[in-house]
Image: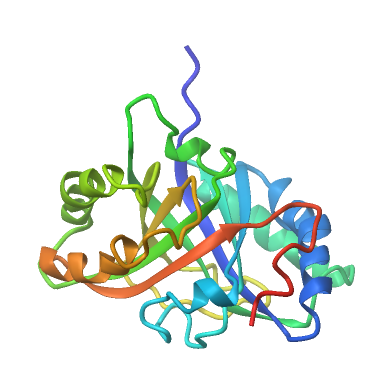
Length: 262
């Protein structure tokens, strides 16, 4: 039997279009860059786009963070899955391809990278054993995703955070209306030094990211749900909280939400 498709690493890129250019940015990204710069790539097998409206940005914690200094920034988020065992080959393809797109004049200058980083997938937990796996999460077209990020305290491990997620956070969350269908945990990796046009991300083995995919408005019952994630993480004694931020899925082929960013 052939080996299953397995998530190995991921690209997380939060971007802020310059005001007045949000529609043009959205059309460029969804019609050109999503495909030419990413989805036709070697060993990249899934991708999805999300958006944070002004309503959702008001729920972020903290408002300004290491992931997003500007409380109004990071309006658009794109996430891509890379096949396990092929990260280096994907990096080579991505750097070459984006440099070619720059040379062809097919990039978009009226934007800023809020946080673009690559992450090594560590583990996942899903609501039910027969539910959506992390490998299928981007193709499921979930209504939204809640991004959470933290940093391990000295002596803690990502294995312990994953266990806390599966044994403590996920059971109570999945038993609630606001809970996720699947959660993926990953660790920050260094960006290639020759990545064109992307601010350097300092290597930090303690930094981790979680993606909580939900089948409803990510703001649903926020105060009772993900508004408590930071406190719950602190109570675990394993890590400090960096960011919690909800995003809605974009509507491909439309400019939906571009008039609700600020």
